[in-house]
Image (cartoon, rainbow, N blue to C red):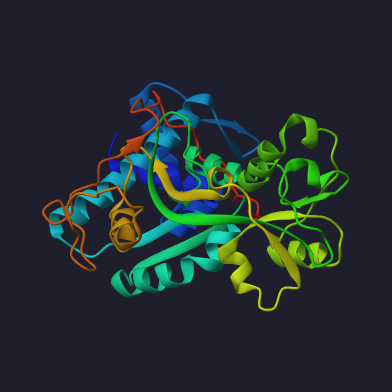
Length: 334
């Protein structure tokens, strides 16, 4: 088993068959078929189930696919590290819609200037969808709203967000959960961390059975709140981007309204592109967190980049990386 065989195997899986894989790799189909057969023979197991000239991954193929992705990525990282070359390739990044709108424009501008050869694929989603995307290797890293509790994830605390409760201008002041009796909540779909913050503040006595209007964007949420449909909890940074929003703001206790946005990734799995992003984010680190080492602008290597201490829920690694499902996280986020 060598890296060339793994690359062929990975391409066959991603392209959905021998014909498309051969076209992408500029090889004849018989060559692809032979290499797959040789790989199966060396491993002593079938990687695909074959039926009517169609291929379907076997359980062994599912396991190998995860390892193939990681080994090929490590190969690229090693080549870049030894050669001291600038980061390149694709960085699959996830972010909350609120972070995307208010925090990422300047971050991505600095990153593009430092790493012009890296293509950033940005996916927005809810906190839970993004976390799942990182765990399942559909995303390399993600900006979320909660420190992950799942094993095998590391995080870097970054932006401090202040959450504010908003209502229509005619709404009387809201100081305690009981003041929201009868009001509908307007929020992102289930999986939104800010929605959970509001529900925890309300408590079981005031949150149970309450009507929730689920929307997919902050502009829609603010518009519905302004019309008197209900109340919502939104980041102040997002509200600042909605010019002249006709809503009334109600402050919540600091222990409820203050949240920190972390960047999360799989423990021990960092490409040169991700290390470079962490260097770009260094000035915005949450107070009290120190990141070791320094990366030269546009260059990440074993000699110039010292990985930051990984704040991990657990250092335990899974026995075998799962296959990354196709597709991306939902586009609605909070």
